[in-house]
Image (cartoon, rainbow, N blue to C red; front, side, top):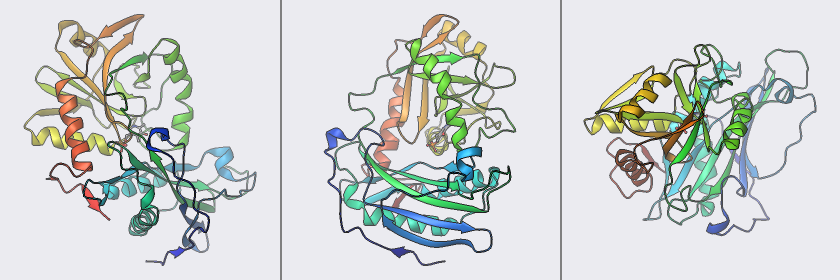
Length: 354
Ligand SMILES: *Cc1c(COP(=O)(O)O)cnc(C)c1O
């Protein structure tokens, strides 16, 4: 594995107060960079002071969106250790995204080692207040200056990090969701199953529409039938219907979340029946009406669990039970955040101590 060169900053920044953190507003003192050239492969692994980068205006990423990203977090446990949550899953997924976007594979061991060294160098940036963390954003951009539509011959892989505040600073409040029946996020065979920038740009319009209806997030239906539920905002989605937990199967239009995988494994470990299958909006509305829809929640790294209180569908707000966070949602939330913060045992070996 290639050596990682380290250039430390001589000019460390002021760290924000826990109360000012928010999401993605501040960046740490260092960043990781790795370059790719068709004739050299990936080279020049380095940690450098956080700084702007210079790109040719013709760089392919600006024109054709050849880019992928990841998102994960580092946590500080009560005992003071630095912990990552299943980081090897992020680097595997990064390479699956790379493959789909015709970006060359990255040595996952090198990427994990870069992550480890970068987090250790900037570990004082991991906030300590409850539920805060250091959000980590690995990403790849196509940098070749050429307007022909073809895979770039040059790339940059970078990792930047941002201290983030408690997602639920005011306690867990269930969100209202707008069921989107015009716009779609993705279609099977496209790129909905990988983390690439265009998926998010394409979702903004629907998100704006949801806001106008007083909703926080969009519930995405599949692109072919406009009938099967896929994701909520940029989270995976779960439903407790009767005595089962149901989540959309990975049919190609949705992202295989690491939190999704963790939640499925946890629920099965608790002896619950989990089904990964197609779920139509009609089935959901029916279950809401006959009372068998007990809970609905989104899952993702940023929030971990995001309970849903109501669905806006065909000009009606359909409340889920009493509109408060469900008991299973809360139990899953407490367990996963407890494993991440080191307050609970880690029976699955998900924590990686640095
Ligand atoms: C990142 C992401 C998720 C959640 O994935 P996690 O690995 O759990 O953070 C779900 N859906 C979309 C569209 C995403 O981009």
